[in-house]
Amino acid sequence: MPRKILGTTDAIALIVGIVIGAGVFKTPALVASHTEDDVMFILAWLLGGIVSLIGALNYAELTTAYPHTGGDYHFLYRAYGKRLAFLFAWSRMSVIQTGSIALLAFIFGDYASQFYSLGSYSESIYTLGIIIILTLINILGLTFGATAQKIFTVLEVAGILMVILSGLFFATPVIPQNVTATVHTTPPSSSFGMAMVFVLLTFGGWNEAAYISAELKSGAKSMAKAMIWSMVIITLVYLLVNFTYLYIMGHQGIAHSNAVAADLMQLVWGPKASRFIGLLVAISALTSANATIITGARSNYALGKDFPFFKEIGIWNQRSTSPIRALLLQGIIAIVLVGLGLLTRNGFETIVDYTAPVFWFFLLMVGIAVLIMRVKDPKRERPFKVPLYPILPILFCLSSTFLLYSSLTYTGVGALVGVGVLIIGLIVYLVMPTVNAR
Image 1 (spheres, rainbow, N blue to C red):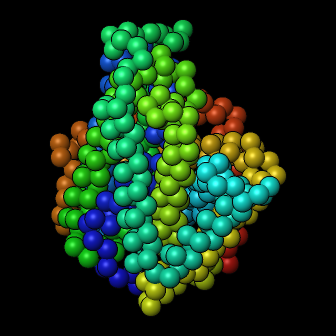
Image 2 (image 1 turned 90 degrees about the horizontal axis):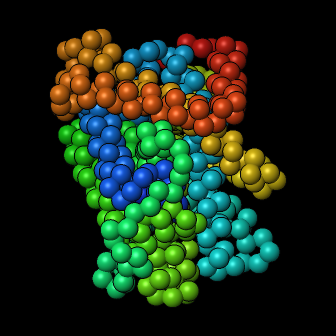
Image 3 (image 1 turned 90 degrees about the vertical axis):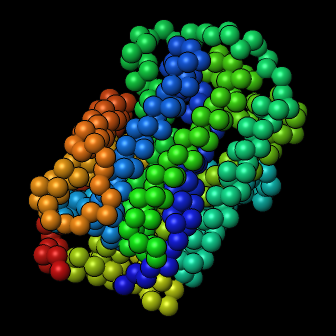
């Protein structure tokens, strides 16, 4: 069984590390191209923080009332039963989480190769190597994985702060601050909605904290504190870095930039600064990959504990305080996906993107579970209750519905890939020798 060995700072490092990834260096340009002016650009990031904080408050209630290594899987199991929970764990194990690990490893390989090439197969060596190394670190024990996470997170945030300080104190704005530009022709309402999709994707990952809720040594209330403080820190960092982009490059400059952070640093320190940004993006991908490995293996472990067919991954190693077999299986699947990605790189990234509708569907189900469990289990002790109930849970469900709709609209027929994953999972569920959970 999992032991309570993590502190509040460990949880904050995991949440901040998994959320502040490579996205903050890519999505600002997309957000700028779908907003009318400076005010709407900053407002989009502020609203993203508010929506994410509302989601974190809902999760805080579930994680404090039902702390479990299975996280979302456990919440879905209690609210809806074993079938929906199994489909969630299956999709997470087969594509969503392992695909995220592989994609983050690809990003690390890309940028690490730019910083220091290992030859013609440099990207592949970095990509496969980092999955193996991070998996081994976490197999050694949660203490090693959590320590690595704190180091990566400190380096990542320090790098972003250098970008902010460089822009605010060592650069001169290239255009007047009061100049704004419309860089699109689509209606403001629909464009702002698309901007929010990109913003909320950049805020994505805070829910992963649920998977370590049973391992916090400081108790259930610490998880609520960790989630709330993490969202405050993340929102402040995002607001500062995007204000810095805006201050130096202007709205139109951001919208037309392919690498906004690199462009900003080159304006301040010259062309060689792009190597620093490459290293920073690599560290960000490394940070998110490590956190994803930590949390992903725990939902696999929970699946193995509940379903005898997967019992081999439901074993917890007490010496290393980690689910070693679940980590190994996750690493193997991620490496297989990397192999597929090396053959058809664009196709692989597209498949990962197409799982977004499945992710937002299950996140919506977790939001509804807050309401269901209040009715289904009213006597349960809840160390933290979401404020303004039921208003905030309903707002969380509405935002998840919006993102589910937006992801379906964006992917179109590609959403069938995610549906296919669920259908395969349903077939596996039906043909398992024993489908009754323990």
